[in-house]
Image 1 (cartoon, one colour):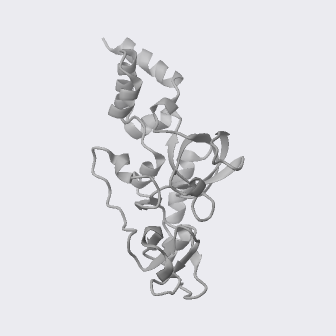
Image 2: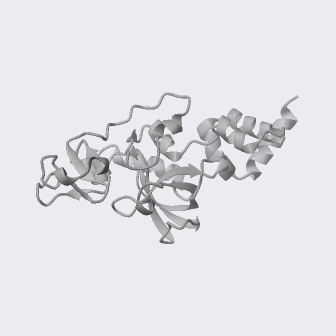
Image 3: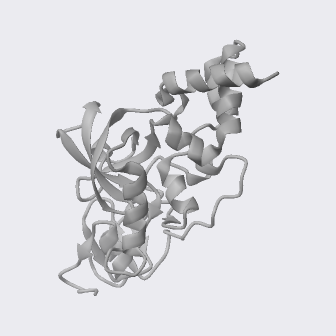
Length: 244
């Protein structure tokens, strides 16, 4: 009895753009290069006033993948390449950072896939079909977007796949708990305290006892558990206290 409706819904699923299912989007384009698990380059197609270049580098917000020199680094990159390379994505750019960028000029973003087939693989066919079935029945699309999470951000997908940890940085607008609405959020690695400290206004990281570290206002502090973590976030060692 449901064969015909399902065929109709699947046909519509192929025709309707996934962007209508995503969270707020501010720019979009095609991924041209993957640097590592949490960083990639995108050729901009739908732009935003904060976009400066035809090809921009994006750093996924509030997640951290292993560095490439580690054993876990290449598998994380390979996963991101398998999902994003050549794919069209939508960017939700951080509104709290200056121009939406981190210390090294990379856009800080929550990223959403546009491809419906990729979305089906993430949330399952039944959820997507429910969305379209209710849409055809006349349910309000905005209400549907809130009640049915058809597409997860890639930030969450990377964590769910085991290739990143949640890093709930207080310096951007995003809250990773939103990505697991109604579900248990993976434990976030603390960023309020650690072995080294940097500033949102600088690209240097320091020992906490460094005279320059002591000048960083509490609201501007970014803490790192290791020098590897600091470098992965785009920071370089302070020339005064010389951390590793």
